[in-house]
Length: 359
Image: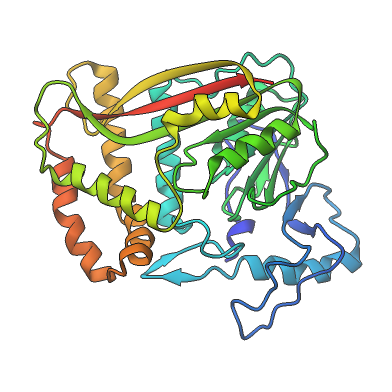
């Protein structure tokens, strides 16, 4: 079943079912039905958008856009995991059902870490906002409840978002690495990114483009996870397998030009891009439920589960493409890593940094 046409409504939210797709560009990609890689990634068509009207697009568009939709949904697999088709290989993490479930859990972890908040920018009746790398679309759907009169757009390389969404939400298949985005400059009151580590060769380019597309007086906000492992009480041994895994993953990510260490650079990059009024918040995320304090224990419990469900997906493409490890070699390597992260005697944690800046 095509992923872009599946998904349930958000409970308690009125919705519009968006069942068709419209191509942006002058031509339509016509893939070879016998090939999963026959469409031209360098052509003018770089996006598919959900069409909000119940009647759908004109009949002459429906048939031709079907080919484009089928092309970007013809997801490739590698070592047993499914990956995005649009700009194949540029994003090293899966988009299969296992990863979709983990992304939902990750969203819960991030929100709990930030005290239940979705954003920190002082938004005042925004008219239009953009979520770059929207994943499963949870953030735009929840923001739609806060701002029902705001047009909210989520972009991603994979069509894994729900079909039935509030009328002010739209999901777009698009590559944020493109030199020009789909919108005129100064289009957005607010641009949001979350957990973009390992997604881009140079996240500064995304910040610079955001500066171009935010209206004067608008805001950009990025919430990032630091892979660095911290410990304040000496309980983390230097040869702890989980600590070693984070360093190995960082090395792999650098080799495939998808760096992970961006969180601690956000403030500097925002200012270099021309943003002013930069604010930064830092939150601790325990690696497992070792803390005694109830909130931090709950947060550690979610993060431990998030890691255990995601570690194969984090590792598989990175280690295979960087080090040429086989699936079997990766699985053997991860055995001790999974055991290590469950060790409550090691009081380790990560940091989540949120940077809020004004244009």
